[in-house]
Image (cartoon, rainbow over all chains, first blue to last red; front, side, top):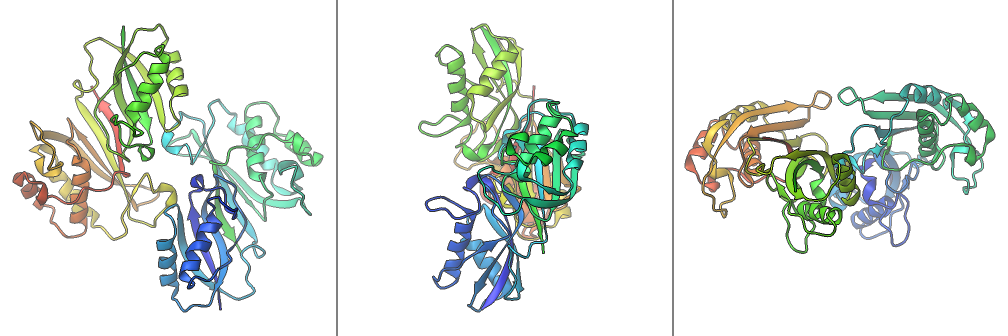
Length: 247
Length: 247
């Protein structure tokens, strides 16, 4: 039995999210179907670093699974990619010790969120969040910095979700404008973990700051309140990418 | 009656090409349906600068039509975009004299073709042609230059198409590699007109040069032969973009 760790990318726009749900097209289900074919028709359970929601993309998602067939890493990569649909792609295969776990061993994750404040581009409608009004980018950048550090992020997650521990550490954030196209804004978050909808709710709140509806400093109060109603709306999924998972 | 010229962009991946065909989703049909709603349920004929094939994109396609309703250009743009599906977008509206014709007044068109010779990216599968082997880019660039000028391009068009005149002038070509990602190659063609499949067949031929199957100089013979069998295969549509139309 060999434990494998795979790095893979996917276009979230054609999926009902990462996690398996009966009757729906999901990334986990496609991976498990492809692996079953490779594994002589025996089921294989795939454990990802975490789920992503419907419409959210991944550039370097990670998952582990076990196989007891004899196959080289290169052939496994080819077999996976030839059995997967063309909106999922396995980039890398590694072998790990049997106690490695793609979910529980995560040390940090990096997400990016893309916003276009320029003219709508139909070719990017599934890949960039389109915002049609002006945004005060300097204020948004100031607000972003208040999200850094160890905080209880209960205000930024699904109010229906019951969770043992809402404390997470965001170690780094960044807001950049594309050199060629300054209307394309990319916001980066590096942290030890993120709650469900957390990044999209932080983005929705940052946009309210950019609109002048909230002041940058209000982020401090929103965090303190530990109440979902204090934060802004949950922004669309299409701008969100899981960029890296670190172990 | 006012003659309008519109500039619009579309994601070709969800369409069976530009031109109306019964029972199929096309860009022309979506435009005419949207205009009919705006024009008090009266039919409007839309005349584009030319058709694009299934899967081909447009960044700045142009088309004309006539309306006899009273509406400001700004409102017409909004009405069009709110009645169009989200994979077509009207960028600009201009009023023209009644003798203006979006097809017959074309002076030049610019197309680009994108090729990725790096790792496959599932998020770009509908927008960049994926080529998995090495290409001799310097030879391709040399071959590209032989396509410039006034030539009979019969070798590069559909052999089943009957056409009065196969002579076209390509005034400028260009091959660039993306600064951030040198595996992304963009080939640009500026010309007074292009035959059906012409750019995709030129690209298929250039790729054969890049593979070492043809020499750059052979382009001269291929043009001379005026025979479709002398050129390379017709390359995929997803890498092709109509970038500009000039009047």
